[in-house]
Length: 135
Image 1 (cartoon, rainbow, N blue to C red):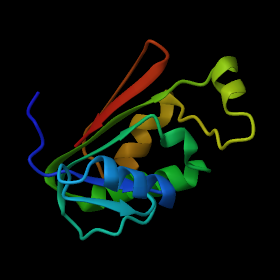
Image 2: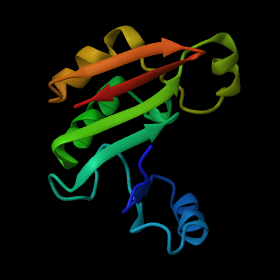
Image 3: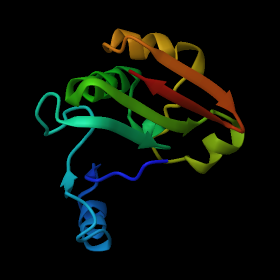
């Protein structure tokens, strides 16, 4: 897998963003405090956007759809949006008692990514998680 030459991190929690700045000092272009539903980046800024095991923390399906649209907006033409998240289960829900937990249904994810502007969307399910890649 090719290594990223430039990496920008977006973190919704201010304290976590500060810790990431320390941890990745000199290894990232920037660590930005902000949210995925209103990304503070110019249109077409990135070659790829990735998110790992965080979509279920986005509080509503409508907000998740805004995040998908924002990912599309900040990508250059031909860019890739990819990621993964856990599937809903009793254990997963128990872990998130008192926390935001809105799992993304795999059956609708491809359609939602296409609605956000992606021409192609691949969704795979396995090992307790959903993976996706959209262009």
